[in-house]
Length: 92
Image (tube, rainbow, N blue to C red; front, top):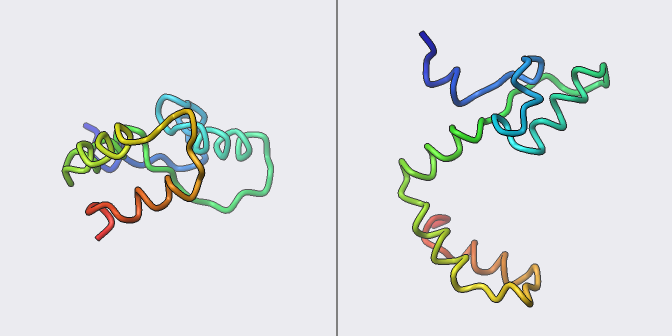
């Protein structure tokens, strides 16, 4: 039986560490580097399901949706995105 830790964390050397659906793009890239023998510090990746559970458990999903709804996708200077996220209650 898998524990939540098994579902939320993946060691970089595990087979699942290269699966984008499980660990996201950056995690999968690190997993591929490890599998290819590149020198990567040992570590783990928080899974996409672990991340989603964190958002849900801390009621952050709605805050993110509100921030995204208020963005003008035609013009998004990086500073305005940073200001929108750091001023939200989820970071206070």
